[in-house]
Amino acid sequence: MRFSAHRIEDDTTILALTSEEIRRKGILVQLLDARQLTSKLPPAMTFGMCEGARSLKLLEKWEGLGYPVINSPQAVRNCHRRKMLSLLAETQTLVPTSLITGTSARNQEPLDLKKGIWVKRWDVQGTARSDVRIVFDKTSLRKALTEHRKRGVKKVILQEHIRGDPIKFYGIRNSGWFRCFYGKSYTLVGRAAFVEEIRRTAEATAERLGLAIYGGDAVVTEDKHYLIDFNSWPSFAACRKEASEQIASFIVERYRRWVSG
Image (cartoon, rainbow, N blue to C red; front, side, top):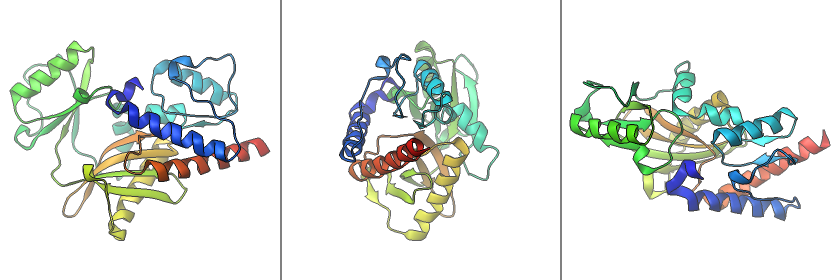
């Protein structure tokens, strides 16, 4: 959970609810902290919210032995910002203009500070609230870079701020289940055509990155929508009960297909 330090409770809850739903379907589930994982006894199937190098390496080993892993370790790595931006650069998906820079860089003149620039870790999505922040002047930018550097973060992504309506979405690829909400209000988006546009972008991105269970953020302007972030297995805070039921059904179906050969 150290890769979502400010959402530990939400992350724990969605995993617990999903596990309960799977148990109701007659399948044994054991929840473990990533630090408890061991190569001694691989499970028949694994699902989880792991981003650490050690955990991903172990899950990759299990996957190589033929055990299903959701989401796959490579898909999780594809969500690391530098990798994700590289993969999306080869698609039609609109993302804000982004620049990678070292946290020791001086005399920065990036993008348009007056409109706002987001300073984000270039690797994992975030381990603390300070990993993502918006700045509007050089002093704030230098301060953000310095704080990242002191925490051992060598590079960041500077991303232009897009003015518009923030949208949060969740989905399970190729399942037909997708939900779209307005920003932090978690008000369900009701416009069908609008939701379908976001869904198409989300599903295409999930396929590009290799994700089965996903979530993310977008910003909608008058005539466009921009993909801001895309995550492997988020907290589903806006709809966790419904999401846990859908995820459990997806996992059980995948497990039974695997067992039947």
